[in-house]
Amino acid sequence: MGNLRKVAWGLTALLLGGCATGPIMNNPKRIAPDAIPTENPAYVPLGPPSYGFVFEQTLDALDDIYEISYANRYDGRIETHPVIAPGIFQIWKAGSPSFHNRLQSSFQSIRHRSVVTIQSAQDGGFFVDVKVYRDLEDVPTPLKGAVGGAAFRGDSSVQRQHEVVEAATPSAKWIPIGRDPYLEQLILKKVVKLTGPKSE
Image 1 (spheres, rainbow, N blue to C red):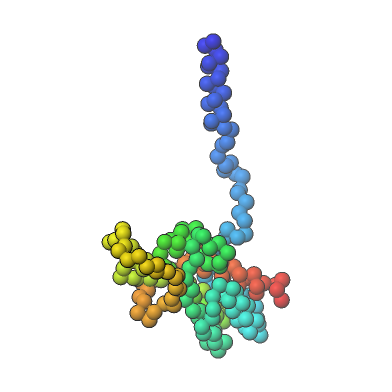
Image 2: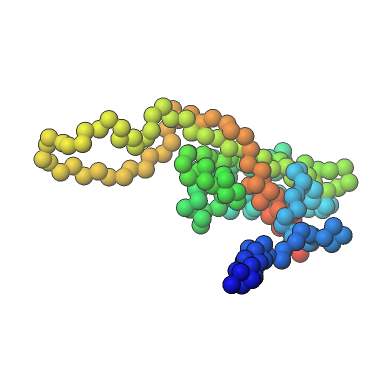
């Protein structure tokens, strides 16, 4: 009976420990191409006559997420209107691919806006610089706070409450909280893919 118990404990330890070992040092890990970060600004190796093509493809990569507010070919600058960042329950909306940023946007009002500049390089290519800024809404009190409300009402009339979605008022204040590198990488990879040799 004692030997059977020892064998049972040994098998349990083997099952819990498993046979997994760490990676072998001389066995390089295969890295997916999407895991490699794109430099910002990204270099697009096309000649000077392709400036219009690069500008249009960059505009195309941006308008999947944003509404364009300013686009000028002559100075190579594209700016977008601010867009409220989607939360984790809005997976169908384009936005930050980072789970942390989406979780934060689920509990707070955060908006994104993007500024892209295209500059010519000395060898004839182009540098596409993408900056995505994040802003946090500053509200003095919670918008739908019910703290301090009475538990029972004295009137017997029925008052229907309708959900009204209001546009941001000019008095709304937004606090800059930095940039979103994940969304910048998403836009840069899309620009590089659209301006690659397969898209010509």
